[in-house]
Image (cartoon, rainbow, N blue to C red; front, side, top):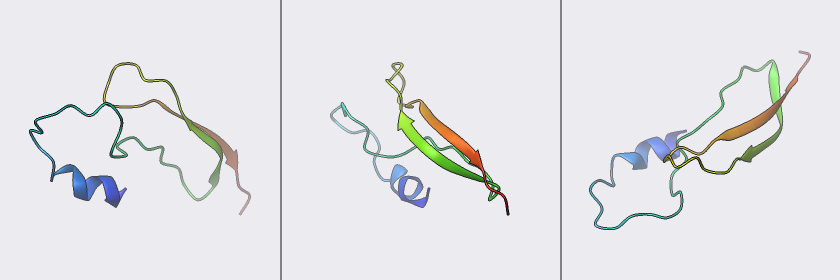
Length: 61
């Protein structure tokens, strides 16, 4: 998450509109007891946030 967090404060009041995502701002957090089997970005809903879908699996420690 530091990549998007550090850069998010540098770009303000741009004179143009971006038509594609340039920073990752949406995450799915989970503990060490879980793993991600698959993750995908779903179609946009008109927000600057993109829906993220992840299939989680239980990891036996």
